[in-house]
Length: 89
Image (cartoon, rainbow, N blue to C red):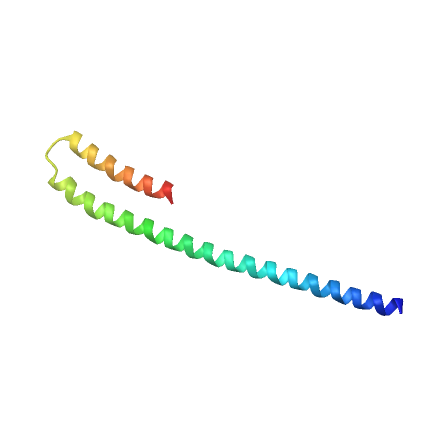
């Protein structure tokens, strides 16, 4: 009788542990997948911003009035936009 009780209790504990482990693994898998997705999206947005920044910077540099001050301001603004995007994400 005691052996039967211990057997049932052991099986019950084993089942509960297996359920908890399965739930923890499922939770880790879900968050890992969403983290990878968010990271991928952020990286692609950063790449797009860098490409657009360069695509706009080159014509602005060519068309800007002759003067080092204007070019410095334009390039600093482009750098500031890229840095602020990177730090807020």
